[in-house]
Image (tube, rainbow, N blue to C red; front, side, top):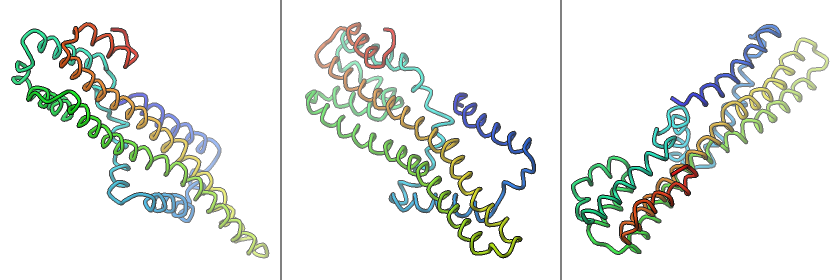
Length: 252
């Protein structure tokens, strides 16, 4: 579980709730029409901007924010893993990697495919072309997940503003009835509040964390290709290690 995400989103939510409770009645901040306009409108309008499957998959990607792949937080593990592969290939020959092919697939299907092609004797250029296609597909998928949350972050405040306008119109239509002014004002104010909270406490942080994770994933996959090229050329494992460390911005 990612502590930073829990502390960030949970802490921001808690501070807002504490402020509400200290300031007065918490029930005054609950309004069904405002929730329908802001939450319902934001979700359905965002859904219209993507194929349904992509939107659903993008929504579920919030799980990655709270429980990211442990390998993403430890690039040295990937660097060590690839360096050991290179050492084995240089010492025992590329065919010696055949016995560990299951381990490569277990770490990443793309790494397994690259090593399979390398063991089968395919040209490095062909391997690179296939790897680039796979990376493009992965980047498209991850970018869509980010885009879903960015869209939600844009549209929740937008529908909050729509709700504010609706509330103001209702209020102005009933200026002669003091009893109707309160509900109209509540919708007007609360929709803006709901939109701002959903965007800034949830959607924007989730989108930023998913983008950060996407960059780490793509760097990891680029590392696989660099390692395959190094194996094919017989590059010294220490040279490869330094190159990968520079890519990930860590000490070799």
